[in-house]
Length: 190
Image 1 (cartoon, one colour):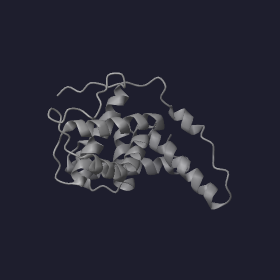
Image 2 (spheres, rainbow, N blue to C red):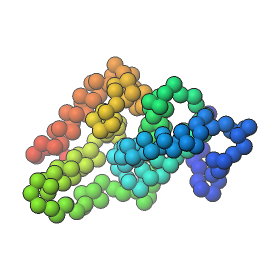
Image 3 (cartoon, rainbow, N blue to C red):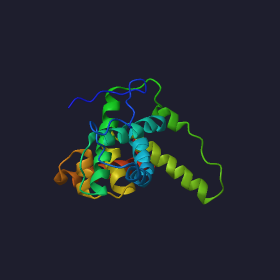
């Protein structure tokens, strides 16, 4: 199967002849699935790509490819895992073709600190530290940590999404956690 990059100029409308391109998911089912998964998928794409503007584009492309795949799924969980697999591949492909307008990690270092009092300011600083540290991790490490600790995916789901053997996943997560922790320690590696 050959996948080509689609732009708005050459994109086909989703309302195509159903005799030729039957969508496996009705409009109402898609809307419900989108509402359930879009926010988490966008956050995943934003963190793993390091660019919120790119995440917007990748989100649309991931759902488009899911609909065009005509795949049959056993459950919504299976469909969600497939969607995250598409998203992971899109991020990986995007790294092979860097965008000239993509935000750099230097932009994150320049992010304004929250100007609130007490604990909220400390939490904002900690979030900024975690964001900076996440951007210093390898892309696969970011994906693993995000899926495990933010999305709450099981090892089997993460292995399917990232494309690794489930037996390798525990050690990969351990190393990613250890590397992130070292970066977050005072005087940690940069």
